[in-house]
Amino acid sequence: MRRFILFVLFISLAGLTACSTISQRRSSAQVAVQKGAPVVYIHPLDPQAYAMSSVGILPFDLAKGINPRLGTAAAGIFQDILLGRETFHRVKLLPEHYGNSDEALRAGKREKVDLVMAGRINYALEGTELGGSRLDISVRLLNTRTGKTIWHIEQAMEQPMDYPKTDILHSIFNALQPPVIRRSKGAPVVVNMLAQSADDIADVMAGARYVRR
Image (cartoon, rainbow, N blue to C red; front, side, top):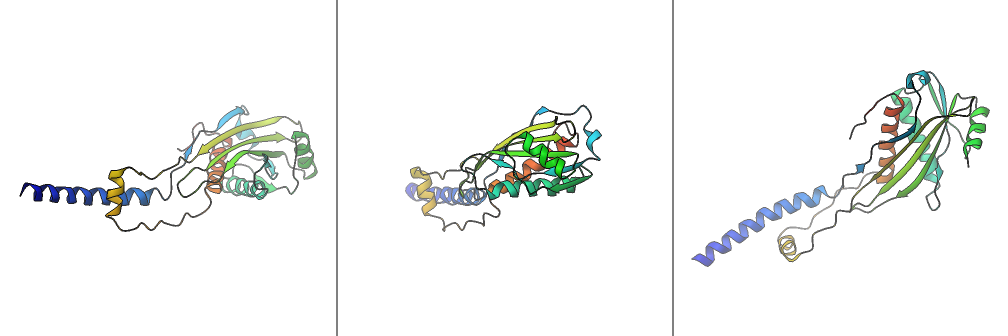
C-alpha cells in the first residue's frame, strides 16, 4: 500500500512538473531581449531647438562581416520611427554610403538637409531559437552647416541563451509529455532589436530623460 501511494505521488508530481515544463518550453520559444539604456555622450542643451529641422539618414556603416543589407534596413527603420514620432520636421533617406564624418556631412549638404544621421552597427549577431542574438549600434547626428555633432548616442542589447535542461530528472519528466511544437520565431531578432533601439533613441532625441524598459 505504501509503495502504491508513493507511486501515485510520483506520477502526480511528474504530471504537475510536466505541465510546468511545457509552459516554460513554450515561453522560451521567444527569448526576451535584455536591452541596455542608450548611452548619451553628446547632446544639445535644448533638444526642442532642432524639432523643426530636416534630417537625412545615410545607410548605416557596418563593422566587418555584417550583412550589407542591414545598413540600409537600419536607416529605413530609423526613418519610419522618427517620422512616426514626429521627432523632426522632415526625415528622408539618403542613398549614399559614407566612410567618415566628413563624407556624411558632404552628403547632407548635397541633399540640403539641416542635420545628417551617421549611424554605425558595431556588432550584430542573429541567434537561434534558443536565443543568443546581440546588437551594438552608435548614432551621430551632425549639423551640416557647422559640422558639429549634435547627438552622439550608443546602445547595446542582447538575448540570453535559454539552454534546455538536460539533467536526469528533467529528462524523465520530458519523456512523459507530448512533443513540443515551437511557435513561429517571427521577424529576425536583430531587426526587432534595431526597431527597439530606434524607438529609444527617438525618445532621447525628443527630450526624454528615461526610456521604457
